Image 1: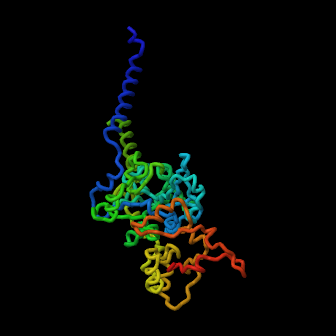
Image 2 (image 1 turned 30 degrees about the vertical axis):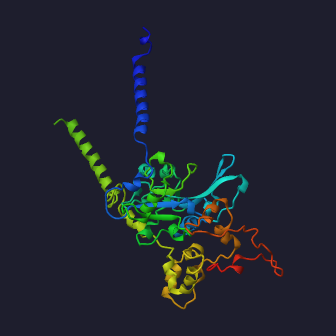
Image 3 (image 1 turned 45 degrees about the horizontal axis):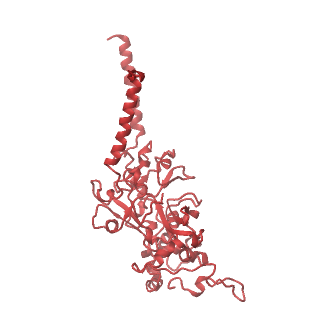
Amino acid sequence: MRKTDIPSSRRKFLKTGFIVAGGIVASGILKPFNAVVYASREPKGEGPWYGIGIDIEKCIGCGRCARSCKKENNVPEEPFFFRSWVEQYTIKNDGSVTVESPNGGIDGFKQSVPDDQIFKSFFVPKMCNHCHKSPCVQVCPVGATFDSPDGVVLVDENYCIGCKYCVQACPYGCRYLDPERKVVDKCTLCYHRLKKGLNPACFETCPTKARIYGNLRDKNDPLVEFIRNHTCMVLKPNLNTGSKLFYNALSMEVR
Amino acid sequence: MPQHIKRLIITFAVVIGLFLGFRYLLIPKSFGEYGHYRGEALAENAAKPLHYGGTASCTRCHQDIIDEIHNGHHAGLACEGCHGPSYNHAIYADSARNVALPDSLKLERNTTREYCATCHEKNAARMKILFDTVNKSVIKVIEEKKHNYIPDKETGKILKCIDCHNPHDP
């Protein structure tokens, strides 16, 4: 009998390992992550529950959103601190993809790839996705960042200890450490403006109305209409972050 | 009760008491009001200062320009998109009419060719929206380095966009 060659402890370990691995694979097949489900299944509560829609087909990459965001929220002028920015994706004829964001798009874009090499090119405005199951909120050791009852992910700057765990945890790169105040800062969907009944700065200045925000609890809201009438997608749906930033015409190349 | 058990109970009581005392002192009052965070942070975030006043704040003094825009191709653009944040400008002008604005409150008037080109420069990614006649969102594009890129015969300066086009009604 060759059976006794494998010690029983190793046999047990292998058996458990295979069951766990198989279980993970099977659960992935049984319940795939969904992209738009968070627009239709809002949590219980009253008042608005904010979401965002961005129409990539309408964005002309003028960078007005990034400019106005920096001015409204006193974001440092250095090129690597952004709450909101624009990227240009260019898919070339040879199959390679280039992503550019010179100074976050604030000073506009210069086409760097000649026309005859371009298969497709488009702008993608980026900002906080205000996820319903935010990885950044989950890692905060002191409870200084949170998902507000309005569905806006905020930072409590008087309580933040500046450990930058959330900066690493955000899969969309939407956070930075304020170099002067030494606390983490991020898009608040201009919470101070929303509460006064004003549009967030980037929505206010967008010349082509490529951006829309609204209340996902109200099924007649323009945002819900937008999600219903367009083929919307969220960034990195496989991470199951419950992102509430819905892009129309989002290519899989966008990361 | 034996002496060593008594000592143990007292030590435990002191440690737990200190723990609860420190916990009470260290956790902010409003923590846990809505969730695992300081409830006051919501109001603090909402109280941040405004910089953009919205187009509505321009109408009080500049109605003539707003009418001009609304009849032209730049209808629908926000004033502050090109001119920058105007909240403090409007508040000052409202409280002190007929008084000259301090320089710090004057709004941006960027008249360079590059500034117009941030929207109107030819770019492969801009072509889709150019021919999108359904939504009537057609914008004109030019090549900034070619379009009337002629030095003036007398001064040698390159023509500015606004020498020919009125930015409020191009």
